[in-house]
Image 1 (cartoon, rainbow, N blue to C red):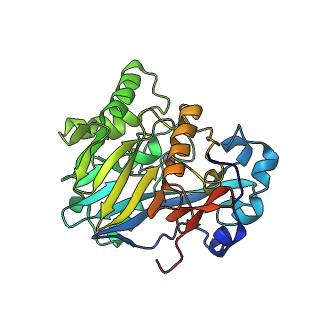
Image 2 (tube, rainbow, N blue to C red):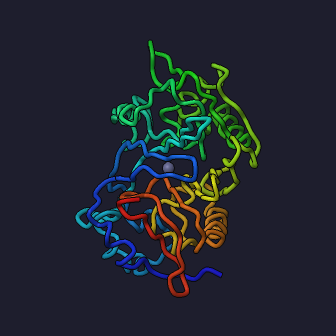
Amino acid sequence: MLAPGSLTSDTLGKHQRFQDCNMQPLTIGAFSVQSVYEATGAYITPADLFPDAAPEAVAAHFDCMAPTFFDTGSGKLKLVFQSFVLQTPNHNILTDTCVGEDKERANPNSHMKKWPWMDNLKALGLTPADIEIVMSTHLHPDHVGWNTQRRDRRWVPAFPNAKYVFARDVYAHWETDSNAGTEQTGLTFIDSMLPVAAAGQAVLVEHDHQIEHGIWIEPTPGHSPGHVIVNVKSNGKRSAFVGDLMHHPIQFPHPEWSTCLYWDMAMSAASRTAFVGARTDSDTLVLPVHFAGATAGHIVRSGDSQTFKFLDDNN
Ligand SMILES: [Zn+2]
């Protein structure tokens, strides 16, 4: 059973100099992973992000979270927005496509943004035509924005040669809400999913779908209906792209703390607790989307709890 604990300064402190995402390129067996950075910001107070957590329990972590994960000046937690490119001998796979460009959104933090995400992709030596598979852990607006781009006043797929893989029930949920006019996030399905489907590039799959040998999805519902993670195994090395299963390293000692961003907080806590329990002290390299600093790391036991040990700079 997982017990609450605290992040320790020796697991987080050595990364305090990182102000933004600076994930280094990684290898997972025969595969490689790179981050495509979009933006970082101090967005939300701990009390707002973790409404069910006792304020004093959250405050106990502030010292070891600043400045990478906590902005002392504003009193807000810092989150990064990024995508991952997984390159195998067979495919270039992009997971989660950030906020995107020129998208009309209700949230001012993502409304009509022009961040250099596409330039950052090209800086990795990749063009949009090189991306062969686009994966979404879920369909929130900060994970599907670059699915499409505006061309001649129309939204068209940003990756002309890619198959966009969606978990079938996730897609169905957003399609139903969009058709009923009840999609909480507004235009996301219309401007970021429908153009992909209209171009014949959407592929709807089941929750145990294998993208290629050694890469498969796994259901982790709660943050959104049908949220999935992407598991990777190559030459005995393991990794997991966990999307928004967690938003902040504080959720490793406290997997029971769901954020206000969740669709079903109890279901989210159950999915996260099960994941943390199964991967603690394992060789699985965990890649959450919204972690600032080095991003990637391993879940390690710490006393009667667990914490997140980031890879050091050279890895
Ligand atoms: Zn997100």
